[in-house]
Image (cartoon, one colour):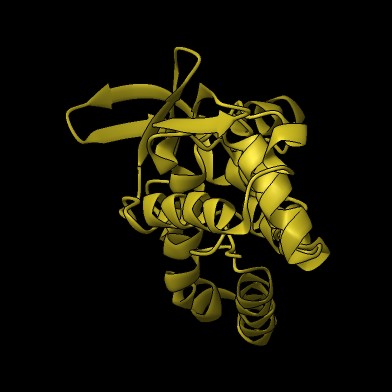
Length: 213
């Protein structure tokens, strides 16, 4: 999406993201962090992160123009595809979402529980690295993924390249599927899901990564 800005009689053209899919997990984490500051700081940093407009020029924009840009960004996010992306591709490698959460292992559950308790926002790459793993075999809509061994540090860094759209849909699906954990583990799982729901609501993770002016 192109944005034209007139300054001192000269019109310059800049680029703004054209779809929410362009926002990576890494960028989304920054947007969430921006949301904690003042509205003016959030607008400045958000526009700078999602466009190639220099910050000094953004500071010189009229409020109505800033509000218009922020509104366009919110519209892009509202149009995101919320369906679960079971298979994603990052730098040529295909990863599959856990194909059967009913068969989740104790090790997977323990790590997910720990990351959620430590903060969903701070550990989104690690949570995604547990839920998404390299595909070993694939045929049409069926696939098998690597067994979980707990070594996710490298994969977590790779997950930062996921789109925010992919992460959001996975989080929502994981939360909605939470009855699996309640059925398997009982009360501790209920507390884990309550904590996750609270954090999703507090940080606006599922739907409101971009604020407004």
